[in-house]
Length: 374
Image (tube, rainbow, N blue to C red; front, side, top):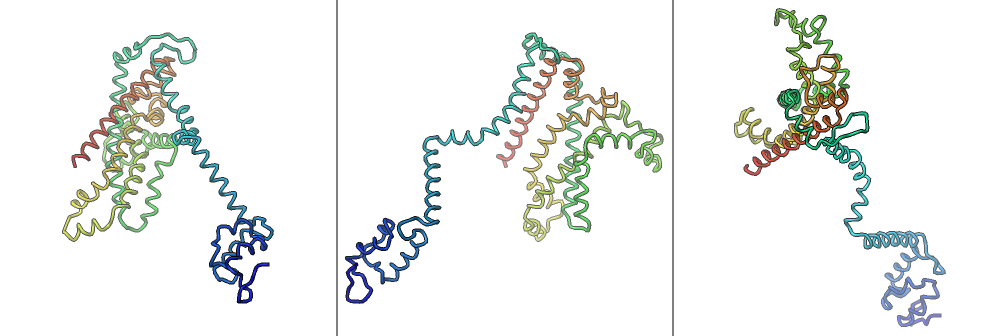
């Protein structure tokens, strides 16, 4: 028994260490100070109550103690793993699945296309013959290649420019408060959501010179004297551009509208107080705020429209009259799968890839050059 002092129930400080083991607290009590925390002291009593949740009588650990030990074990294992593996190696292990997908789905096809462009190879036979830069030399002297390139540039430039102008205008209108704005915003996305094959079939029916609705309306309002052959040689590129603008402008609308909603209203209020007109507010506030998103939109839409295949193919080649709108992707496809010239088609794809890379780098330099100058 512990030696008691002058007051009943008070353990003398110098005998406290001998009194503790009788209560089954074990080594967990060794961290407590020897003095000032006797059984009669409030702080000492609270410490023993708190320890009671973690340690049971007889020295057996409680639930909280076991959970704490498990956490410490996991942390120690993670620390040991980090010490064994350098940070760079551990990071590579985390992103390894994504790297495998990128290599398998992007890098390998690109590398194989570059390798294939140096061979004269049939599309469906394994035999191949090394020609070096022969395919590229043939492309440089191919008049159909230059014609397809020119048509692709015209198509991409016209559709991107019209999408940008119409998309920004529509976004500015939809940014204003008016009745039915939510419903109209939802309807704007409709052309972008429908499948391309459906859009092409519907528009080919609407633009038919015999029973099409478009020519019928133009004749009714006396805007033309005779039906326009929209699907003929003279107007096929024009109609293709119109359909593409109708289908893909919603992308620009949504992108610009999302940016407009983040512009602080205080800027416009301050401009109104200063007497700025609507055009001045658009020029000095809205347009600079839209600069970054317009940069991304123009870059993406230009690349996507230059490499667009399904709309152009269905509008022309699928109807048997696609020579007038045969862009570079269509020409590369036909060389590969119609004339079975896989090496020549791969060289066309490599050239198209290099042209897009060069145009993108020039575009970035021009944009960031203006940003730094500003």
